[in-house]
Image (tube, rainbow, N blue to C red):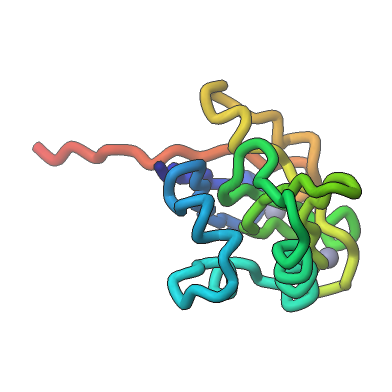
Length: 150
Ligand SMILES: [Zn+2]
Ligand SMILES: [Zn+2]
């Protein structure tokens, strides 16, 4: 299942669309199988470092996917840009690995906004984050309107 999450700014022209996908989009056994060319991770994990860490983990025994995986919206605490990234956590014998990403602009660690966990809620309080373009606290969640022509 995928769902759109659109962020817009009421002060400037900033608007961005994110696809949030959860769960059964990908088969869990394929995600952990790096011998298979069908493994979608190399194309959906936008970080070589993170991908390599996951690949190494899958060589260990008793590695399982922890919780839900899917696409979520991340934000950079430094430049305030939003990104769509694949969130996944792996449980293994020595602990828990959570996929992390760096901001491609300023290399800061991105923070997951956990949008996918709250999709049922009608609105997200994104007005507490400054706009990545104009810096004003004027962001809103936008919905695609069905335009009826008569
Ligand atoms: Zn940044
Ligand atoms: Zn703005």
